[in-house]
Length: 302
Image (cartoon, rainbow, N blue to C red; front, side):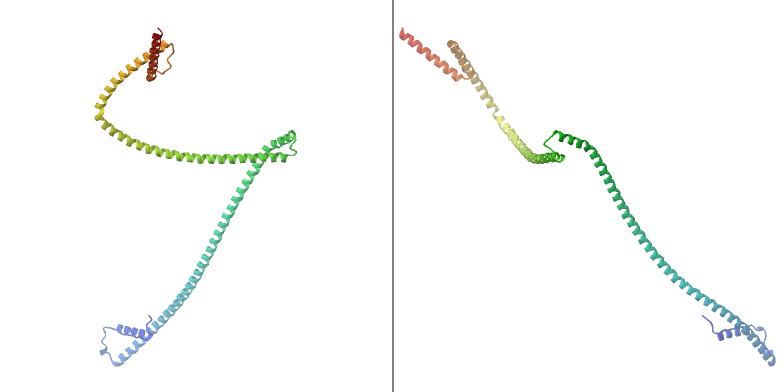
């Protein structure tokens, strides 16, 4: 903060007066000398003040000039900041436009590259088709010559299209036959599906029968346990039946022997089965009755 001029000079005057002859006693001087001394001091003080004033003015002028320079530099800096900010904004705008153009160029290049790849693939496909057509033409050239020879051998066909139409008819018939075959195969697949279903059902039935068999086996085991108590009686019954069977076998052997004797007596081969014991007994009975009748007749005639 700046100090007023009067205050500055007053402080300087007090400082000068306080520095003049500090050890001298002013009361011992005569009044005239004292007044002269005072005037001289005032002149010195005025000179000193004038010199300080000039120095102060010079310093203030220098400070004012420096202050103006500082303000000028501040204005210049503010203008530079504004220009720099505007330059940054322009640079950012140019950078954004450049990035957009670069992105657009990249997208355009990508589209062009994709289009080039598509066209290259299409060209390659057309080239392969052209080669394939050339190969087919080379392969079909002997067929064309053969068709010409066939036309010469088949008078009912005047032109190649007629022969080709006949061949196409046969090809259509073959296609129809293949379609019929495909339908039959589909029917066969359906039949196989139904068979698989029946097989699955049979498997389920087998599983159910197996479970039922297990249950029956369990019941059989229980029945076997129940039959253990009857084994002794059954052994007795078997022994009795064995004895009776032995007697029956002996009886059947005797009947068979008698039947064979009857057949030998009649001089006829056995017409009955070996196991037909009842028929053998009937034949033997009939033979015995006939023998008795013949004997009675012979006795009656004698």
